[in-house]
Image 1 (cartoon, each protein chain N blue to C red):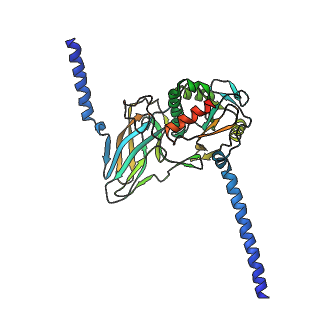
Image 2 (image 1 turned 60 degrees about the vertical axis):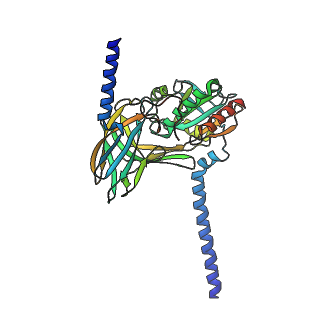
Image 3 (image 1 turned 180 degrees about the vertical axis):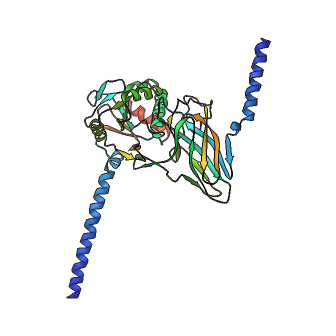
Length: 168
Length: 201
């Protein structure tokens, strides 16, 4: 009994320690004047050829910057797309020139709008899983961030439940 | 004399501008018709025949007498399609036994890439009562027409392409008449109510 308790305590301490040491606690990243808030990827259906990725980009600097692309070992390639619904029709187009972030502003890559698309994932990504993506900015350069796999925008890893509605 | 000539020229110019405007606006409205029709008063219930991810042929006659809902999409779609299917799965769980009273159809607008095997694997992530359907290019076109839905292939760089497609979920009553559109942006309670009304009608 005591042994079990001791084991649980050690596991608990180890887990909290590892959580504290990770940037995952706040799950924000930065490079140069660019802050990257909570990168997450949408839990995809089995064998889905594409996975959507979302994050917040904030430019704290005095000059404009542009997210021009990214790479990840988890998928064949990373694309930046915009999505719109016009007259009831969903239209998706690649943003060839990337996503610009004006000085002193934030840009949300969120469901229903501009998003990253991970094309041909090398394996299925499960809920709560984290994977590394290197994002490339025209001015700030490259930065490696961790995307967490979630069911929807509001579902933090491991806290989502089956009956929780997804935000639109 | 000069005035008459000027007048005549102006009239002809006006006619030319008007004619040009008519041609352009007719073409534009032709292009937009499917989407507008889907929101306005669509002609639904036309004939269609497709094959399910389990290999069964399903057509408008085999569905007769039972309410059903139809969503057009494709698997190379990172957002609307998986989200709609996950949300339908959640709504069906919440509806409980009522969810057994209607069929849920996901028709691929991209039969070229969405093979039956691909769809069979894709569908394991959702409520097992949701049926994916695919057909040849002609069968797919007929299915779109049956619901006044719209889909178009959009070439991208290289040999890549994406699909534009009607985003709403069509509700078809047991009698085969059009019962409205389920919009995934409207409140969850509204969507549940629409589905409850569909099965109680």
